[in-house]
Image (cartoon, rainbow, N blue to C red; front, side, top):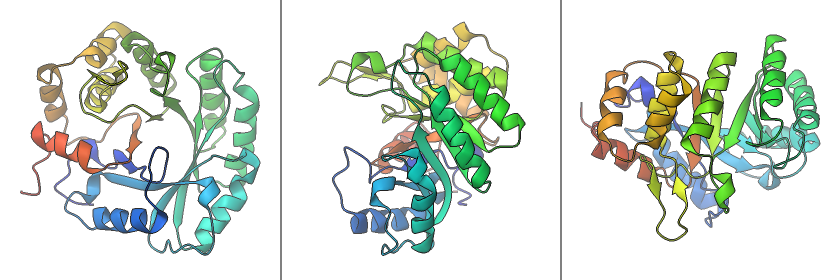
Length: 281
């Protein structure tokens, strides 16, 4: 890991260039990811996220750390992992939605439990909708982890409709619920920029990844939902940069990270905010 990326940001950003709405081909994505992994900022980079539907033993993945994003059926995941490993990939993680919004997540969690039991070397992330059944789902994941399974929740915090963007209070409640259960979590969608902002084209207000980071640190320190929500709602860097700078040399609590199709965007913003030094000691 590069010593130029502080521990707080280690592995924060997965490479989602192969996921929608990405339009590049596999060879281009592999080449770009390999370049990132060989750069001074390699410590920021997590896995290359590969859709399950692209799994093919004829791919060349030797030396790449891969996370599988399920876009088929949960039952197909063991075969998908086997194909990617046959292609030389180091597959350490799978991520799969367990229900659609409004559906009961429990059957999907049971299916993922079976996968986690069969593949104890994998980290399994269960994407649980931020709707009915969420807290019961988190309780189920907590029980699964208590049995020694490497399973954790994942949440989608953006999308193509306004209702897919939780409010700061709603997301704060989820973060605190994970804190109370000692659950690491991942986030997906909508975290393109460091600060909370409104997209001028869609009118949707997106969460900022720096907001989430500072909010999660506050939650891990015992902050209440209102204080966590305040960090999530900030649209100016001042209340966020100093708390992040103060914790740069400590491991990031709870939040495993997020994916983006353009690794250089979050990197550039962290440099601009003075939180990463831009390749210089």
